Length: 77
Length: 148
Image (cartoon, rainbow over all chains, first blue to last red; front, side, top):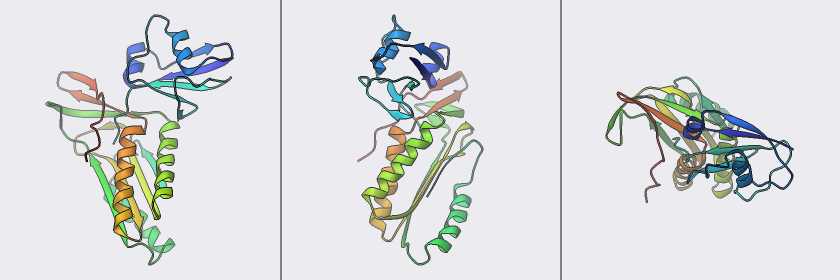
């Protein structure tokens, strides 16, 4: 199944790209999405995660076509 | 209710005057309290002079999270209306960053909801500041915790 991955702010800069496309097997979690794309780099501490524009836990299972986002703590306002 | 991101400078007080003129038509005589928060860009942060700033956001998610915050405020307090505006893009010192206005019958719920909305925005709305300094640029790493 296809998963659309996005990175923002300092994480975007650190990875050198705004996102990835992942072809994943069913049952993958948000944490599993990161691990599949970055096998040598643990998720940076305090990284926030979202699925389809809402905050999501690392344990949430993703589905075909989901947009999964990883980003640092927010600093608006 | 209006929630809006702006990629150009805006005048919070002019926006407020225009919005409230509409309210006077829609809710004549109903609101007794308007609480307002305006956030403005400073020229110093964490000991360094800041020349400019870029605000990045997550299109779609930022608007959705702001919408959820406003809906939560309407569930928790008897509000009549709310206006939330936030800048994205390039800013200079003194540029307004955020406007939050809340209307209600009485002051207690207006103050409480306005305070809730700015703290929720600062902790949950996907927006990120990158500061331009004389020596280069840096991402702001986190917002300060809500004061007591």
